[in-house]
Image (cartoon, rainbow, N blue to C red):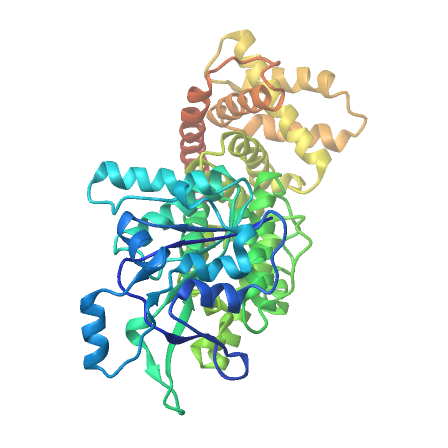
Length: 496
C-alpha cells in the first residue's frame, strides 16, 4: 500500500508552537507553525515511490497560508503590541513542504474546494476528496484546521473509500492548538492526537451489529487481528474468547451439531479453546474463557489495563455479544438443535436452519423412544428412525389416510421390514415399536422439512421447487409446528 497524507488547510494565521506526539520516553516533538509539517516530520521516517501528500485548500486558505504573502497591517499591529518580531514575508505551507516532499505533493489545482456552505458544495467536497484517493491507499488524515463540519465529511469519505477503493486508514490526526500548555521549561507545547481509536469504535460497533443481526463473527475476528497490532499490553485471553466465538458461528454454518454432552461443565471450568467440532462444546469453552477474561479484568482494577477495554469500548460490546450467544447455554443436543434452528430463523440462514431442523426432529424421535434401546448419537439408530418416519409418510400418502389405525401401523411394520431389509432382529423390533407409537403430525412435519432440506442441499435438482421466499417463510412455520408437536407429546408422556 502507498502512504497518502491528506490535510485541509485553514484560513487563520498559523503561529509557531512545539507540536508533539506521545508522552515520557516515547515523546517526539517538532517546532513549526504548520501542524501538517509536524505530522510529516514526526510520523514518517521515509517516503517511497507512489506515496503522496494532498493538501486541500479553499480560495482564502490558498491565499493566506499556502502561498507566500506579505503580512497584513492588522498582523503587523498585533505583533508590535505583543513585542513580537516578524519577517517581511509570511511563509506559506507550499514552500515549506517543497523543501523535502516536492516529488510527493499532489497538484494543488486539483485540490481547491469550497467552504461547504450548502448541500451542493458539501457533495462537491466529498467528490473532490474521494477523487484524490487511489485504490488501496493507506490514508493518514489531518483534520486539525478543517471547518467544524468537514471532519464528519472526511470520516464519511474515508469509510466509503475503505469499502469501494479498499483503502486503509493508518492515522487520523488532530493538533490541539487551543489546548496548548507550557512545559517545565516554559515552552508552549501542542499535543497531536491520533483519533483512529474512534474509527475503531465505529468498526467494532458495526461488527457487533453484524453479529447480532446476521450471526457472523468474521468481522469481529478480522477487526481484532487488525487492531491488535496497535494495542498496548497483551490480549491473549481476549483473543481466545474471540476465536471461540468464531468456532461457534462457523460451527453453525457448517452444521457441527452433535457432541458427547458428558464433561461439558469440565470444559467450562478448564477454560481452554475447543477444537471446533461441535457448537455445544465450543459454547462451553467460550463460556469458561469469557468468565476467565472477566475475572482477569477485575483483578487488573485499572480500566486501562483491562483486556476488553484495550479496544474501547469493546467491554460493552462483548456484553451485548455474550447476551446474544446465551441461546446456546443448554445441556442436550436436542435443545442445541432447537436453539440452532431459532438462531437460523433470526439471522435468515435458511438452508442452515432446515438442516438443523431435519436433524433435530430425528434427534427428538431418538430421545422420545430411548426406552426402546435407541440412542441419539448412534448413526444406525438415527437411520432407523428416519427410515421409519419415511415409511409411515409413504404409506399415508399412498393410502390417502390422515389418521392411522393400529391395523395401518401393523401394515407399515410389514412393509418397513422389507424396505429396511435388516438382518438384526432387534433393529426390526425397535423400529416397529416406534411405528406403533409415533404421532402422524410429527411424521408430516418431518416429511415437509426433509423434502425442503433436500431441495436446497441438492441445489434444486431434487423434488420441490418452492421459491426462495417460500422456503424462508416455511422454516419458521415448520419450526413452530414442530415445537408445538414436541410440547404436546411431552405433556402426554408426563400424564402417563
